[in-house]
Every structure is written in structure tokens, then in C-alpha cells.
Figure 1 (spheres, rainbow, N blue to C red):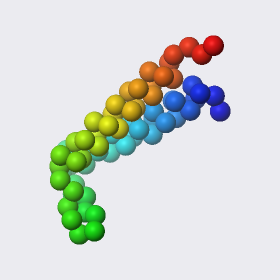
Figure 2: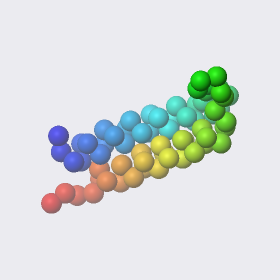
Figure 3: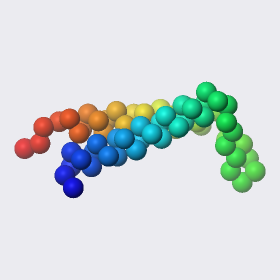
Length: 66
């Protein structure tokens, strides 16, 4: 597996995670861990991190290799 394909595959996975976070926020689905409901601000941070990692991965997959 080349570095470019690795970056592309992981970027797609992070994009899917970001989309799932966005859908959860829009639909109002709650996440419960050990009986405690995860607050919305934690989900927003998850969306931002997953989106950023997807963006950076797509940038890295487009850079020319030597």
C-alpha cells in the first residue's frame, strides 16, 4: 500500500465519521455511555476533529510523491 492510498483510505474513513457526527447532531440522537448522556458540545468537538483529519488526509493524498 502506498502512502497516497493510505491517506486516501483513512481520509474517507474520517469523512464517514464526520458525516455520522453531523447526522447525529441534526437528528438529535443521544449517545449514552455507562448510563450518562454525552453532551452536545462533545459531539461538536468530535465532528470538528473528524472533519479536520479528513481534510488534512485529502490534502496529503493529493501531494505529489517523489
